[in-house]
Image (cartoon, rainbow, N blue to C red; front, side, top):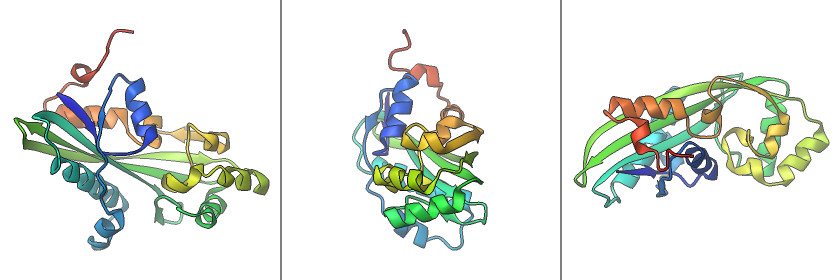
Length: 208
C-alpha cells in the first residue's frame, strides 16, 4: 500500500520521514482561494478541512496506484481577534502578521483528509481537524525584518515556522507540535484507524 502525500510542503514530508513513512508526493494543484470562495461563511475548522478534502480528492482523481491512502492537509492561523489567515505571500503581509501576533497567542488549525483506494477505486473517506495554540514571542523590529528577509515566512501558514528560523521567536506550543509543522501524527493515526488501517503497518522501515 502506498502512502500518498497530496502536498508540496517540505515540512510535512520531513515529519513523515522522521516518523517512519516514506510517502509518494503528488501535489494537488488545488486553487485554495476558489475553494474558500465557494463556501458560505464557513467556520475556520470547516474551511481547513474542506481545503484538505479538496487536495486529497484532486490527487485521487489523477492517481493510478491500485492500493493507497491519499492524505491531504491544510493549515491556517486563527488570530486572537477571530481572523483566519493563511500564507502571507508578501513581506508586507508577513510584517503585519507579526505585528498582530507579537507577544500573543493564536490557534494553528490543521485539517486532514484521507482517501482509501483499493483496486484503483476510491472505497472510503474520512477527515478531521486539530487546533494547537502557538505562543508568540516579542522579537524586535530588526529581528522581524531579518526574519522576513529570509523569505521563510512568506509561504507558510500564519507567517512562521516552528522548525526553521521562526522557531527562535516562538515561546511555546500547547497541543500537538507536529500539527504546527503541517501534519498531525496523532490525528493522521486516528483517521487511518477509522478506515481500518494501523499506522505501524505503513512504516517504511520500522527497524532503526
